Amino acid sequence: MFDYMLSNEEEGGYAPAFALSRHKLRALAIEEIVKRSLCSFDEARCTLSIKSMGQEFEVTYPHGEVYFKDNPEFKPKLDWRLLILNHFSFVKDIPLSNKWISYRELPDGNVFFLNIKNKVLDPLSKFYDSCDKEILREVLKELQFTDVSTGSNISAVQWFAPKVPILLKFWEGDEEIHSSCQILFDKSTGDNMHIEDSSGLCYIVRYIIMEHYNYLTKNKGR
Image 1: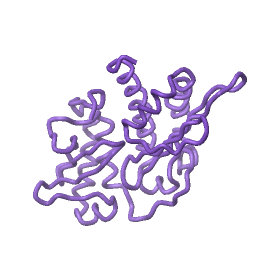
Image 2: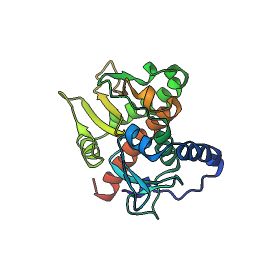
Image 3: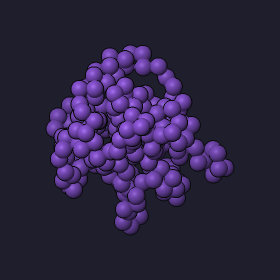
Image 4: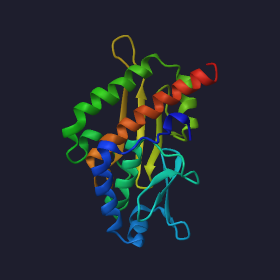
């Protein structure tokens, strides 16, 4: 875990959303949650374990508290906590399709796509245009993305949860066309993650990429 990922921020205005998510979690038998999510459950500790964006987390059952694995004093950012919690009660017992699609192609994806474009994809595209590509590759490696790049472009796979992979793609620009970025989802994501949470995941991707780039450039003298 890295400092920029940590937040002990109180739930505040998000409290109703957390309360509803915990209510849904408690309504499900732990066996059903494990079967659907493909995550493990520690009966002695009463915790679900999930690897999300390269980080290990535990979620208490049935109370629904989210923290870094074996470190209950350290919690991830508030939006990340809520997305993890929501996922456990939303995920379905269906396999991955192994077909990548854009956010806009997800069910109801058009509703949020303009915000995603303006606040996530466009900023990442501009970032890629000016960033040091070798440092970016190091960023993705340290964040445990799997490099699937071809040529000079950068493509990398990461997992929000065992049933929610994402494919992050950057394309080099030229004199006529600016660099661009895309975040792709498995076609099954619409069944395994609420569309608003998929939107929130895009923001988390942007945040950790740009913050870790800053972390490397500042803390390693790059």
